[in-house]
Image (cartoon, one colour):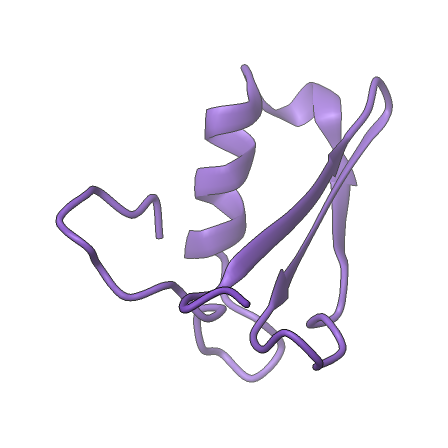
Length: 72
């Protein structure tokens, strides 16, 4: 069991996909799919996922801070 949110990612040559698992037995959030070429690397893609607004205008969930930086 994870005491925090889990980022699920698939980074390929053409597309990058992200979702978040909020609970061990929950379905993941809807998948966000973007072109991999739009980012300089995995860190940029992860940062873009967490700062993008979803359809409701809110940012996607982020994990609680545990002393480290969260790319949010």
